[in-house]
Image (tube, rainbow, N blue to C red; front, side):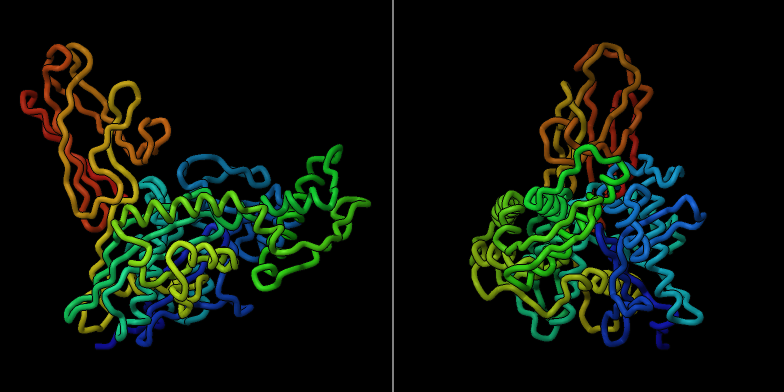
Length: 492
């Protein structure tokens, strides 16, 4: 029987920091939905006006945010490491999980309006590869809160690689691919090995790295500050409300100029009455913009070197680069990539804004068993962050290091550090710092009923296991106390 991919589709949602998109799988491949204005992306913005009960979400919210930024949330994806923090919108408090669920629901409802009898089998939502376990869990909770049937979570570079691989399935050779993902709020860099044999298309992650505080929003802030200084705009002595409006206008001007300078060498920035009696009217060239964001390029330069080294490859071993995210269109990105991996390697047949949503829909169809191919898709992932426990003096004791191919399993033996303790809390962390204060806590396992012994006498065996779906189980064993405890931690 034929699956109805229109009324009962498998969906993929790219939940972006700045913009989001939604796609479905069809017999001819992934198809991205459009909104009534024939736009393929929606602003990841929520706005609330105290004169109205209903919140605005999406592009209309972005327009209101430019006038009244105090009552808008932009870039909530950067807040997903603390799903319980409070965000005040016009006197009402919301969490990042709730705000994200509104964005997901808004995107979903646009797709729903296109088709009578719309009843999807489920949805896959994307996250940056560099997200921690907690950020991934919070994203999944947001999708469930939006009322979506979550088939799975997929990392954005894996989704982009799927879109590339499926688009080139017939001609795909064994090759090493770099996915350069620079969006509104995060930077992900992942190197894959593609293997196309008679039975499988294999996507094997060789190395990954990134920065979840580096993206187009940072460029806009930096550039907006430069425009303010060059124009001589004076925000001193103005009210807080006027300052917020002026800053929002500066960000809008910076974003518009940034986009124009991706295609032109020079542009005019004109903003009349940005404050009473103060205007912006100046000419800015591409070199000035690139100078503003040079420190971010230095960070990306270092990350590229580190990831290539972690993959145990030379620069010449990279066959192709897939650019993802709107900020990857900045011309200097091409110069950086050519410097790092060589010329004529940038692949341009996938849309940087849409390929993540397309790949997510491919993965949704794969999980739902509706991709009718003779070949199996095999995704081999690796850990993005080290996993371990808190040791003495606040230090991070690593059990599974970053970039370890999954599935894997590691056991280490610890002991008590106080006399006659009968119970203890074992805190689980994920990160790259030597000290737990700089890493992300992903859980705590309480162990009770320990045999009373002096410090150092009891051996406590801690085992971390990660399967291919990036689920982590932690096993605690203390033989003399007859303790064996297993808990699961979901990474994606």
